[in-house]
Length: 201
Image (tube, rainbow, N blue to C red):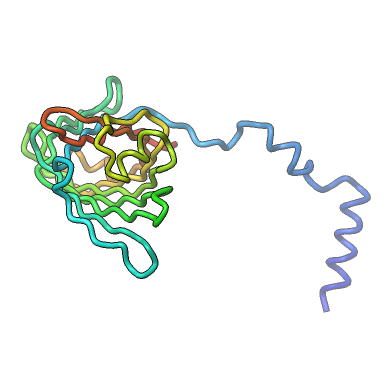
């Protein structure tokens, strides 16, 4: 019963220019665009090449890989100037689950870990992300090319969240974080994932 009235109001608005400017006019504006503030530098070393646990391919050609990380060489530290309570931690333990497409063009990542700060607080964190396997370096990584020697920034991104106990690090739970990543190789063919983590505002 209200349809005729709604139609009449829409017609009136169109004649009186009561509608907002077309959406196409606002797309060029940066208003409302998320702002990224550098927050943390994260390094997670993983087991040497050839020592991870890979399952597959399954009947659809997908691979699944379980990759434990270890503490030596790991860190989660605040970027200079970020926050009042600085984080300076190592990764006590954790592991990544990797889902590789049959073509190795894309990898889906899921990681769960616990970081221990220099004042003995435990910080549980997890991330999910995607890696573009079509890059010249990431393709070598996923296909097991022995010449792989790391990758550049720009081929992977993550969403990261924290859980903590009440106290100085509680603020971590109330913030949205994203990150970019790259792979590095060091030591005895140790695979390191290096992340630049930013707060989304």
